[in-house]
Picture 1 (cartoon, rainbow, N blue to C red):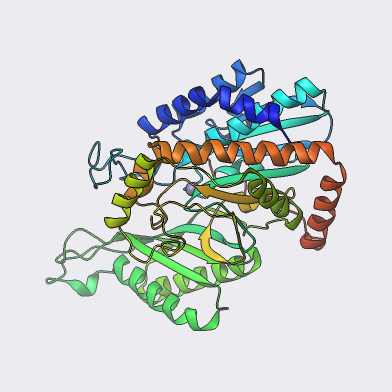
Picture 2: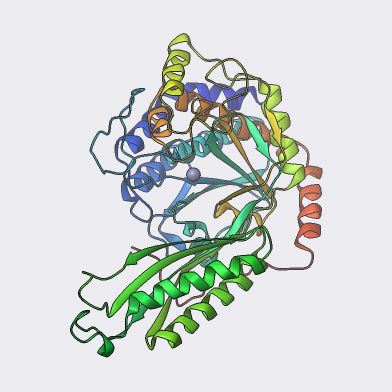
Length: 455
Ligand SMILES: [Zn+2]
């Protein structure tokens, strides 16, 4: 269908790969994606897009648009890396710099894949005089699960009629299930220090308060719905056993398949913390860091993406790529990789999958999907058995395996975009379904104004 778009993505493939490689070589973690956002913005500017960086109170965000009138098609790019995931492009675990960040969620591909879709679509729209607007949103800090939420708070995404979203994965597939909504917060307890042997009766342990909070939270597990997940880590547990800690802090995630369940459980966790403070005669300060919505994949858009993938057919892998993936499969970090039993090859080769399963991870894409109808799909950018956020993913994100999956995704999105431009009833149907699933509710940003965008 979109021959002009496809050809243009091919013509630009080297430049797109160069951009993705540059971002891979300079991994920047959430809210620090200064170079990645600059390079991405520059690329789109050169392609004739109207680009702004740093709107919505989020310095490393991008809005790049081209075209005019409706429908307005949104593409959601990301470019943040993960801490400590540095890895060379080789099938053995070896960091480039030990402890440095790396693209283990392959967001170096993610942003550029959407760029490819944007420029492909523009090319075909220009040549054929198709009416409509493409908006590429560059979204920082997906790994913090708050980048798009802060952007939404600042007014982003409201202009969109429909959203196409892609994430690199192990296989070509659409996802019909949900991913969880989430809140993240820290608790800071303050007590009174004392010599733990000499005069413990004068001490009020902030660490005791943290521990009792966890006892309370673990009892709470029985009285929440099955989808609720609560996890925590102690970020400050004091200095030494012989000092009663006057300061202790812990960090929490609470997840569930609805915003309502997250908010309800969050309130109860705060009550537990206040109870623990009362028990230990300490003070507690709640630092709310942010939250996001569960995903809401629109069936109309999901069908469109699946159809586009199946029309394009599977990705064709070279022998070198297959061998690289085989070696990764031998040394993969998680032998229970979700897709390790599909097919005979270490790389996904079959027809795109239609996956109905829910997943307990979260993504801030959920917020955008509660503002406009859209869907998230995945393409094969790693060996099948690669565990999420593993060194396998970093290796493939710098290898031609990842680049192929990225260019393929760009083509899928440009195809889906052209279908939308050629048949206005698609947006209407997607909107109608969206209204039904929102059931009269409006998107309410989970991050209040007093929470500052992290630096
Ligand atoms: Zn990711």
